Structure formats: C-alpha cells, structure tokens
Image (cartoon, rainbow, N blue to C red; front, side, top):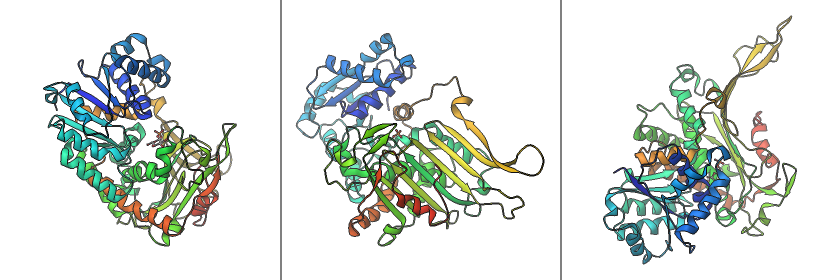
Length: 481
Ligand code: BG6
C-alpha cells in the first residue's frame, strides 16, 4: 500500500468508532505514528456537518482518553484530519456520492475501509465499493467480529468480501489479539525453553480461559440480543485465546505461519453436538442483582432487549483439542456479563508431583492475566520459614506495568490499527480460521435449540449460574476465582 493512506470508517457515529477507534487514532497521532497527510473520514446516516462531527468526536474522546494524555492543541491538530459524510451505507446509490466526496484519483492513495457496522452490512458495503470502483489494489478492508452469525452466513460474507478484495487486503479484527498479555503468551511459550517440554497432556491437568465482565449490554441491546455471549465473545475472543495456548510453534513469526498453526487447533476441536451439548455447555442469563453496591436490572429489562428474551449473557464450555499434544486435557471456557469482577485470564493447571513427599503440596499453576492488570504469575510450593517442613504456595509474579513503569500501556486497537496501516496481518483472523470457529460453534447453537436449553438465571454480581461450577466440580476441579 502507498503510505500515506486515509481511513474511512463506516459506522462513524457508533460506540466502536467513538470509544475505541478515534481514541486509538488520537494516541497514534499524538505519538507521531500517523503520516502527516492521513485523513480520517467517518461515514454514518446521521445528518451532521464536519464541524458537528469534530465536536462529537472531541466530546467522546475526552471521556475515553486519560486526562494526562489529552491536550487541546494536540486535539486541534488531530481534528484537522477528521471529515464526515452523511450517507446510508445500505443504499448502493449512495456510493457514487462517496466516490465524489473522496475525490478523483483518490484511489491511488492507500485507503483503509473500516467496517464498524452491524455484520449484516458487510456484504453490501463490499459489493458497492467494488461497483463504485473504490476497491482498488491500494485499499484494505477491516471487518469487526462477529463475522456473521453462523458458518453459512460467515461463508457468504467472506465470499462477498473475497469478490471485491483479495485475502491479503482483508483484516478481520479480534481486539483480544492486540492485547499485550495475549502477545506475551506467545513470547512466554516460544521464547523460553522452560515451558515447551511440559506444555502438553502429560504435565497439564486442564486449562481455564475466563473472560468475565461486570458491564451489562450498555447501549447495545439490539445487537446483543441477537448475538448472545456465544457469538459475541466465545466464537472469537475465547477461541483465539485457546488457539494461542494450544498451537504448535510456528516456523516463523509471520502472518501465514502463525495462522496456519491456529487453524489446525480450531480444526482439532472435538465436536460438541447432540446430547453432549447438555453435558458440556452451560448457558446463563443475568437476573437483577448488585454490581459494586449498585442495583442493576435483569437482562430482559435492558434497553432494546426482548422482555422474554432467552439470549445467553453467560456461557461455559468444556472443550477438548483432539490431537497428540492435548488428548484428554479439558479446556474450560467461560465468559459472562454482569459477573462479580472484571477479570480475563488463562489458567494452566499443572498435574501434581508424581510422588507426594510433603503434606499440603499443591500442583503448580500458571496464571496469565489480561485484565484488569497485565500479569503472569506462577504458583509454586515453597517452605515456610522456621522449624519443620511446612509448605506453602508462593508466587513468582511478573506484573507488566511494574516491569515497564515508564511505558504507556497501548490499547489493543492502537496496535492493531497500526498493523493495518503497515499491512501486517499476523494478529488478524484469516478466512479459514473464522469459518473453522463457526464450524465448531454451530452444532452447539443447534443443540441449544434442539434440546430447548434455556439460559439458567444468575444474579448480576455473582460468578454465573451454579451449573457452571458443577461443570468442573463433577470432575473434581474448581474455577480459579
Ligand atoms: C467486545 C464485545 O468484542 O469485547 C463486548 O462485543 C465486550 O460485548 C468487549 O464487552 C470486551 O472487551 P474488553 O477489551 O473490554 O475485554
């Protein structure tokens, strides 16, 4: 791609654009990482002037960016990059106007289209860009997850995108891959000889991947009520984390090699279908409760949510990777909204020592925490000071904010937007990955329908439905909380 390039954001007045993309671009601008003449063009249906949009963007960015990072002069120079076009992206006739707005010859400049819209617009936007001759070789397109709502719809979207853009031009974003600790997981596994020999079924009892949020559905009820936790979180973020834990070492750290290894894991996931769906999955939906001392309503009372909705806001699954390295090791996946605490982490639970010399000995556990703080800790057994051999669990604790105190923590979108600008797709999902993830998820969604598996209620501010605890307890294990 030619640099400099421009970025055109469809869905420019939505929460994603205003809460995530613009603050990330503002930071990149402030750090001098954007080409001086890069323009950022927002497109949405709302009738706004350029000035209105700049004012809206400023208001929302001020609320998102840390006070110490925001200053008026930097904002003023950033705002000069911003422009706005009111258009209905679902109407093909509007794309002629978009072409004029972009200007003749603008296709020779690099351009990134960011589709921060509902996924049902992806196909038509791609087609219309191609028809309006706006999808030339110097363009890239970024798609937000979820790509579709099933394997079939994902294939249709991918085919439509593929008709207008080559795979190298397509960036399917999963912002979890832009999180520092997620990338650190790869560094941990593949830059340290220590872990490789024990990173396998012989030494690992099980793996837990939890992404728990205290937030509810906020202003996204209309989208969320059709998606649910499975499509919103598990099909993408949690399966991507699982891939990074389970994959073999790629031969190189580049887009094709890394993604080849991830897709092998998705294809090795043991199918869960029929009656297994009841035994290996738990759906939940939050009821009224308290978060941080504040009363919050039940899910079905949220704005734009059906009053008798049976969408899940929580899901727990016992998955298995059916390959040589992982045979028999359960991967417990769990994600929920309105949980007791915000915490995303991966727990690698090792097996106990083969011969127990000491009472109270506990098996080692490696915890990779993504949020709220970024840390990696290894629980070991040590001796308590004093007489006798009293053992106690101790932690080797690597807190990334403390190791790099002078470095500002980048938001995942900053890293990923810069990768798109530079054309590096290592941390983006390839078409076959997305489809392999849906191929595993679809039978579970079908099983829920077939067996009328309604979501189990759990009080907001709790650890999810009891059945999610039983999923592990029946096997003599517990969630790390
Ligand atoms: C998004 C989901 O992809 O990730 C949201 O659509 C969710 O529902 C969010 O709240 C969580 O992201 P993070 O980075 O806050 O863990």
